Image (cartoon, rainbow, N blue to C red; front, side, top):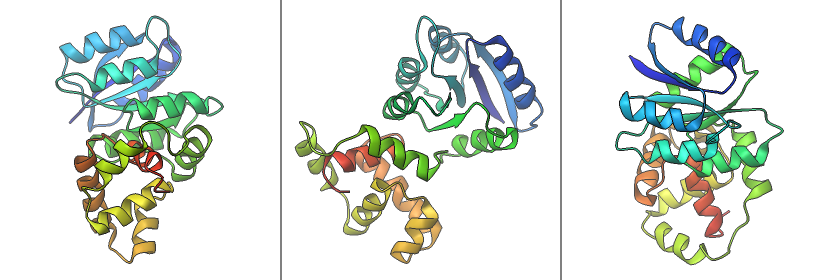
Length: 215
């Protein structure tokens, strides 16, 4: 059973999402928060597996809340809810540790699918959208370039190849096709890359690769 939390300052949005999640037998909605501060308090009190977090909220916005949630001793996975005309907020949320983002008008079945995927350790990031955000707001080089290159040196040559494709925003199936691998093998490589680079999701790995000038 996936223990979920909804974080949104709009009561109607919370109600709609609650109805949706309650209709899924594999999800247990254990908490609802109206802002980021309340979300952190509830996540500390209840073991949360996945939090659906709005970006714009009073007191503590979704980006700051994501960073605090991911810093908890038992951090929940975070899916950011947004309208996509706020690209920069999506980028910041992903950099803060979110495992994915969804538009608020996403099909209900896709929202449920995202919760299950993220709970299982996958990222729910549309490749084209992730690529758009990274390309628009992130620039290679800068003061973190040397440190990023040092971290990437710990990877095997094959992991380096996979990371290069991640930095392009490719999905696992695209990486598998490009590198002649099984998709399950790509998933295993991605898992090892995240551990080796000490990042929480594939977008953070892509950002690190961009810092190193890999893409």
